[in-house]
Structures are given as structure tokens and as C-alpha cells.
Length: 181
Image 1 (cartoon, rainbow, N blue to C red):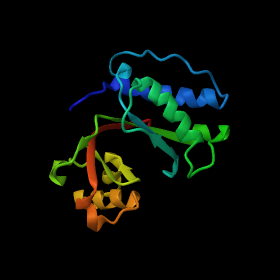
Image 2: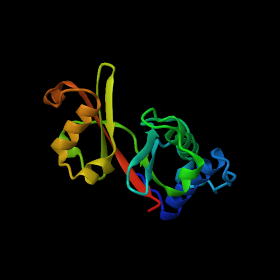
Image 3: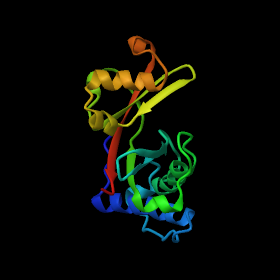
Image 4: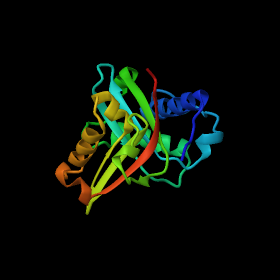
């Protein structure tokens, strides 16, 4: 399923995240951004925060949702900044040097063939029992992976042996990613 976000909607998404963080850190108020079109649709998303040096500072999102995109952006802005278990909560003095990236996701679908994955457009989800690993489409591009390595790394993130990938539940999703920089 194809979906789109206009350049204006992408800018509004980034403003929602930035203003949510400013408000939570008492650095400003959460100004009301115009919410129309795709921002009202129930679309899952991920919010990623990185430092000016490109170091990950937080990343949290969801693969499925019933909530509108604009609400998910606020929720995951807060979770990425304060609840990512890999990092200490973001401090007010850090915000100015954090870069925001948003990934808006289409519906998750069963993966029939790895050939169906278009690098840079599709993210992967691998699960088996209680283990689950998800990598966004942009990760494969950032690391220069081919499809096989992308699948292998997604398996590893789930704590699963890539050699047994045919035994796992494999799914993929379309992704539109954009950032402040």
C-alpha cells in the first residue's frame, strides 16, 4: 500500500516533535500545529533523536496503531527522549544540539520473498516466539547493506540466528523518513 506525506506535512511532523520536546523540557510551549490530511490518519511512526555528531540518543516507535499520526508523534517524541532504556533521559541543555528524524510507516505485511524488499523504502520485522527485531528502511541505507545483510541484521537484533531465517515470521512495511537536517 502506497501512502504519501507532502513536504509541508513532513515539516509539520518535525515541528510537532520539536515543540513537544521543548514543552516537556520546559523550554517552550507546545504550539498547535495544523493537523490535516495524513496527520489525522492512524499511521505508526518512529521518532529518532541523534546528536550533532550523529550518535543515537533515543529511538522509539510502533509498527501498528489506532491513533492518528499527530498523536503518535507526540507520544514517541516523549518516549524517545525519556524512556529509551539504552539512554539516560534527555536534559534541557541537550535539546538544541539534537537532530530529529521521523519515520512514518505503512501497514506491516507478510514477506513472501526477500526480493520484495526495496532497500531504502521497506523496513523489516523478524519474530519467533517472544523474540522480535525491527529495523527501519533507512538503517540498511545508512550501513550500506544489501537485502541479505539487512535480513541478517534484523535477525540479530531479535536475538535470532540468521541461518534459521526461513523458520521465522518475516514481515515488511513501507517507510517514509525525513529529518531536520
